[in-house]
Image (tube, rainbow, N blue to C red; front, side):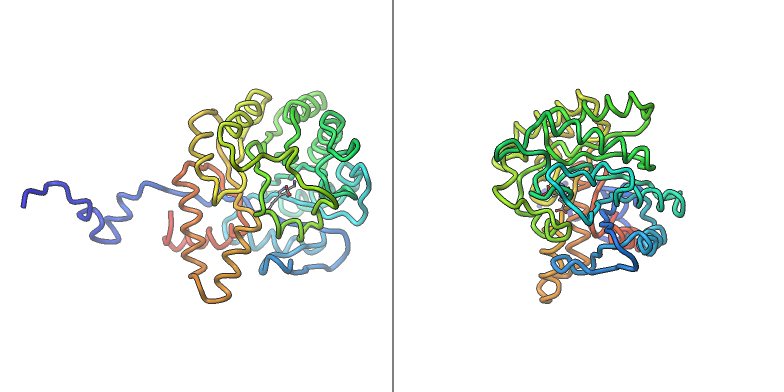
Length: 327
Ligand code: PBG
């Protein structure tokens, strides 16, 4: 039989398969999302995200140390305040939960890179990502508060800020405010391509941030749209975003490919709470092999082109890389 090309030839052994691997990954590109809350001596499991915890500041070091031991050197901080109000005051309070967590982490874990989620929804009594006018989020009034929040994070020690609110013009508003205050070197990772998604369900449970009425569809994107995602990415790049994020990851890797072809920034993808919860639940039932599923999801994201992967499985993925099972 005349057959010169046999793809199986390159799959003959583990050594050869590794030699011709097209996707290489590095622990340095993993980011772990972490929840900090008011109170003392708290490490409480999030019911919808088994294996994930909310930490009070005095115990967040346990988590940071485990991450460093695993080789994960970046975290994204989310705060759960004690008090919420109409205008999310605790988001930009000097002694807010994230601001104090930053102070603690900077002092005790200087080797950890600290990214903060910049948004209002964990801090507003109505659970929306900005201030309200009638029954909708008012874009331009929200920009001022987001910029104020980002600046307060930078002052408290954030290494990078990551706005996730999906207001128009927020990257520019934050950039200008940071620059005016002298924080020209603090990068902005924009949740630029963020869809209104059911995959955020467990997070809203974790952060107590579900909207008390309506949904987020007037600001987060309709998941039927792809050109719109590219538009958002381009706008944010023009406004000065240093890194563009696609969120969620698993069902949105087409957007990673498209955005990567269009903008000239590193691309991040956020494997969100619902992705984590689905894998955990199915694994608990014994229906899937957790380790292999997690590895496959991560590799798929990198294969699509992500440079940064934000995931609740960061520690486990770092271990899989260490053991040579992926990457
Ligand atoms: C804040 C924010 C959310 C997530 C990240 N930042 C919630 C939302 O937009 O409703 C979701 C993260 C996850 O599901 O893991 N706006």
